[in-house]
Structure formats: structure tokens, C-alpha cells
Length: 295
Image 1 (cartoon, rainbow, N blue to C red):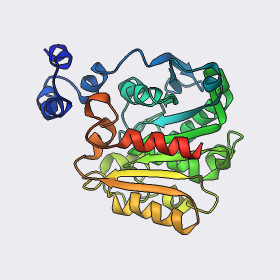
Image 2: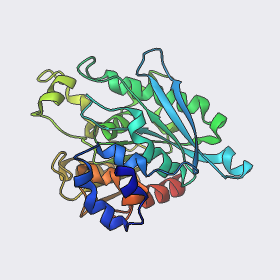
Image 3: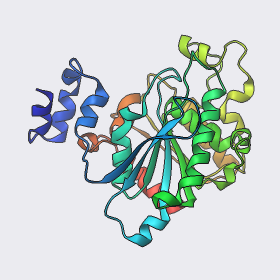
Image 4: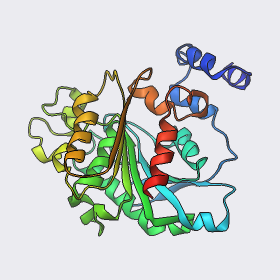
């Protein structure tokens, strides 16, 4: 039934309206990934960036580009959300396809999760995945001078920490200044004290260090940023985190673009990157324009 609905010639608005009903039988990512085109990218999957089972990533390489373009394409390293306690890279094929369709080589990385690990292990894994991206960018047609980190929700926190707190990239032989920029979607950048039980475990609350907050690391040395969030986010306070981070970066003289979108939630902000939901918010357009202008 699901595939029949997805293959039907329904307007995108109608399909979006039907999404809650479809979710009674399958997960949201199953619905979105079932609509993903297969002719816009070449997939290299299950590549290790470290020795641990969850230190693996997938690369979505754009198809149909010229030889010159494939030497100088931008690369985005994407980290998904899930409260640092859940998630699989395969669930985000719709993100990889969306970015690849815009000529962006895309890395979707797994990382170790709580409760098996605690902060800062998932940030350290994220930095190691970025190290892999720098080492292998040219192999996939991307330029090492055009590498961005990007994340949604908890993954946006990981991206922010890699981009703003020099400790993590320094540990793998890099510096944040090597990044072309970073992109945060509905990210939590300032969330102490911690009230959510799973986040308490992930950050060993109440013994969470103050410097675990990404906002505290914003400085004039920070890479350019694109920060997007829903106007009404029931999971992460967009004014405290997204607006607060944008203000701190701007005050430090850093180039930052930020926007809050009506009509999307914490989850559908990211889902709007999928082709069937792209009319909900211009998230993919903002990302593509930012990457082109900065890179």
C-alpha cells in the first residue's frame, strides 16, 4: 500500500498531509527514503573511519558532473540527531540524495551512542569522521578547501562542537579554520541545566562540564555558519540556541546566516529536504546557496 501511494501522482502537499496516517504503518524515514531518486548519486557505503563498529560512514557522490567539477565540488559531513542515543546513517539517505542532487559530495556518518558512551565520545567520533573527509575528499571529487560540517538536532550540536571548539579537531591533526563553514539545523547549543533523562545520561548530569556547551566556544575564529530552525520547536528552544548562537557569532564578527521557519517542526525541518516535502521550507535551497557562496 505504501509504495502504491508513493508512486501515485499526488501533489506534494497532499502527500505531506497523508504522512501522519502513513506513519501508523511505517517509520517517517521509511516513507521519505522510499521516495528518494537513485539516479542523482553514486553510493559508497560502510566505509570505516575508525576501528569501532559504529565508526562507519556513507558517501553520496553526485552523478553527471564534469571532470573539472568533480575535482572541486564541496563536501558536507552530516551528523544526524536522536538525542545522542539513537540513529543509523542508512535512515538519512534522503539527506545524502538531496545534497548530492545539488552537486555536493555528502558524507553521512554514524557515531557511538549513549548509554554505551558519554560526552565527549560522540564529539570525538565526529571529529574523526571529519579527519576522514579531509583525507579522502579528492578521491570523491571534492576539494579539501570546501569541506563543511552539518547536523540536525543532536547532530547539529556535534557539528557545532567540531567547528567551534578547537580541542576536537586538534586531537586529529586539524583546526576549525580548515573548515569552509558549518550548518546547524534545530541544534541545541546552550542547554544547561539538563532536564531530559536521556540527555542527562549522555552528558553525565549533574557533572556536566560548562565547556560542553557549544555557545561558549563561539569566537572571532569560528568558521562561517548557517543556522536554521523552526519558529515553534517543541524539542529545542530556537531562541536560546539558534538565535542565541547567531547573535554570539555576529557579535564576534563571524559571517552567519540564520532563519526561523514557520510551518515546520523539529523533525519536518530536516524532512523538508526530501523531494516530496521540499515545499514545506526552503532548507535545501538555503544550504545550497550558503555552500556555494562560502566555498
